[in-house]
Image 1 (cartoon, rainbow, N blue to C red):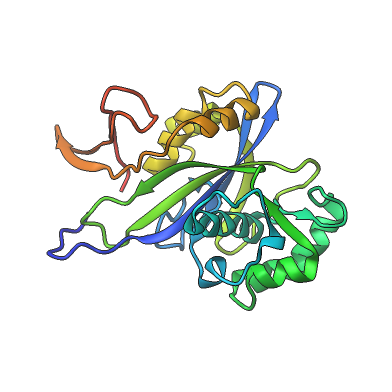
Image 2: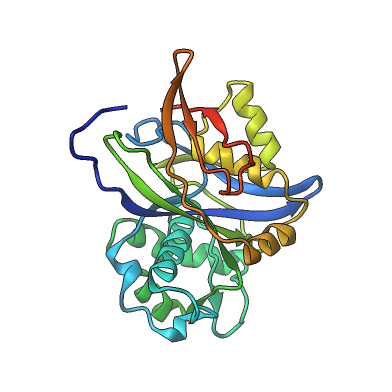
Length: 266
């Protein structure tokens, strides 16, 4: 933690929690960040990244379905979340105008080969992808889930918006080998146990959202919950308790009612 006279303004970012139903409950797609990455290096995280200029403009209504009631910035952040999943794992959450469903794995792999690196290196944007691939984003496939803001005093700060997404059937995730070094399907409890066993590192918002997801019996239940709940922004208030840095979050944010205080890995 770094104390500064003028707080750093958080940058808008989006994270996508990709879910599928497994034998013992919902599984979430998690990726391990390279240890060379400055922010969250070596951590097990959900796919995500900063909002790009191309996520916010140009994309017409033909390429967005069931999004009319959403604010412009929410649509842009959802597009960013979907783009980041594609860049980082090759999983394609968009649908084809011709097939009206997510791409099967062979078609998805071909699109990933053509577009993944170009998007990641800002050689094109999602508007170009939608037009060339004949795809669109159906907002029934995603749901706004949470919003976390990096505490004041940090050198890098993000205003991160989390989205749930249903995993398309038959698509196999592949990590990019640069920013990410592995990709896994895990139940929330499995991921939390890996941290407890000191096999992985989880960032504080990741850990808290895994705990929240662990209460969901199915993907349908998770989506149903988010269709009715409002999003309460979480800006953790850092405190020192018995020599450890802890964080207090709002009671009504959906993570329990005790005004939760939890150990933070900074």
